[in-house]
Length: 216
Image (cartoon, rainbow, N blue to C red; front, side, top):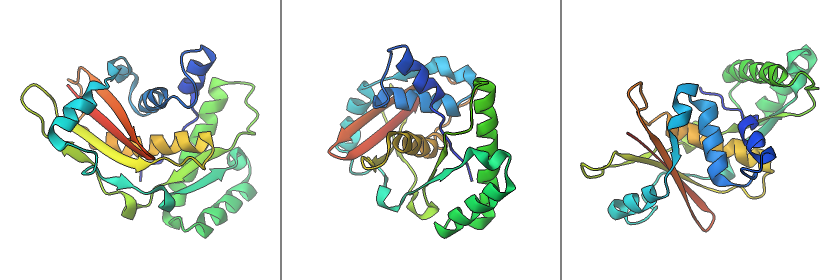
């Protein structure tokens, strides 16, 4: 299982510099991809709205894109005290169990959460371990894969996934959720050492969000 957290470091830096806001989907997508990709690929990321028109010339609508229903998604928060308190670890383990999360996978979540807290401390020596770590659980049965759209010889394949937008969740939860969905999309995209460009785009229709990736 791939555990995804989002401390939103790059997104927050962009906000502070006036380059983005916490609700800017382009910034959310880019910062999320940067968090998940090795630094070598960061300069290759390009917001490319024209991907949508290219996609629509073949598929005609977003209806064929596999969809994740947020009504089945579980948001949980972990106390950063898991690093120093076994009592907190036991409490969080029980909370996850009550939510139906597989007990066999909790240790993976715990390991990733501890790494996240340590990373926060390294980035900010004044970090006081007060801000919770948000965890988003997309159940395996709700992951329907991604759509791979075959284009003509001038274009790479376009990979896409879609979901509704969890507007009732906090902004931190929403950002972590979008990163979790992007992680499902990213793992199906063939990025390798010879990749020169990674293009991304998004389309919002009503409450439905479609995410697109293409590599060259």
